[in-house]
Image (cartoon, rainbow, N blue to C red; front, top):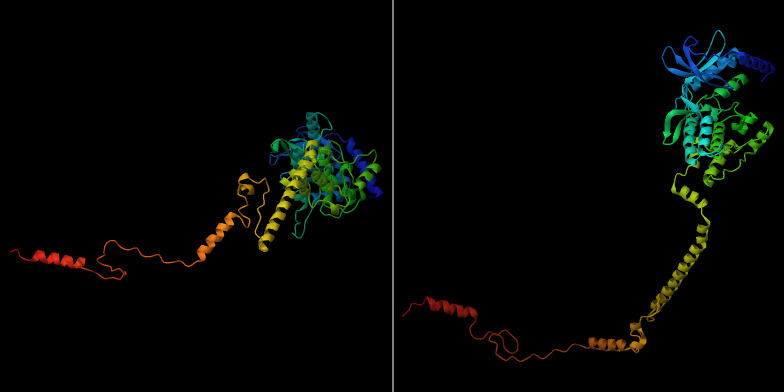
Length: 460
């Protein structure tokens, strides 16, 4: 930035501090917006609650008079914010208009009104509720908050250009708790407040406009808040969505640990700490979640997560494997002592199994070689199978059972002899002694015919 521009900026900021407040109620701005009250103020200007007299809708109006340092800068900002106004996401407070007072030269940003408080104030109240200013928040709550921010950031990063040829990739470049609103009376999920990102591209664009840069590209410089700036922002290198992922990781770390990941007494020491990219581990955080968070702090942006949502998903135990890993990190000393016992039981079972396999193999070899099998008992032999009860084991050669089997085999091998036919005590009228069919006397049919003939003869 040239010396002339620096002087103009310094003079304008000084004039801004001398300007009277414009938050008096019932005052009309830009011949359209009635001031209803003052919402707050910051480094970028004063925030007012206004009512659009044409539509009757209420908006948040941010006064940023130093945008009027040069006329071309205001035009550049207005063109760039036309891109931001197309962002329509439930977790982004959309910038509706950007207007400049033609008389005073003051610039105003008109955006969605979010009734609530900043995430900074909400975190302070939440920690007091938990019992201390440095108390960490539960992991489930932190991930519920971070998931909303991640979806909004990824949405902005993936927006197509007006020609549809590539990603627009609008970057926030100044994400911090002061630029995140907690909506009053609304929850994202039970116990998790609803978040909206404000000033999307505003703070960084204010600085980029003075430098002559744009938020609509990935290869330009831009500013931010020191504690939330990625190394490439410090170095003035090309920016990518990784700068917003870094800032989101700082916010997540701060909510979990109750402190910032990089702290130092001066800017030089802070810059060295950021460049080292080695934050102190959050003690109560599971290892897998910590590894996912630490990946977002890689100095080389190519080694970070592919998206902000990937950062949050990597920290969330989404399956049984992650749950088991978390449980494994919290094993008590008694559980550790059980491990040798379990290993010993496993080895005993394995040894018994191997011994059984050896015995089976030996029996198989005996059958293959034609040897009669010998009984094998893994436990004490029952009394009724004791060889002394029979004189010999019935399954061994030479035993009584084997001798009986041999005798039966001999008898079955001998040819069968026909048994003599028994003499009949009474002669059979129909069969002779040889068994041939020789009817003797009158047959039943003949006797029936004779009986029928006798009945038909006349009586004498």
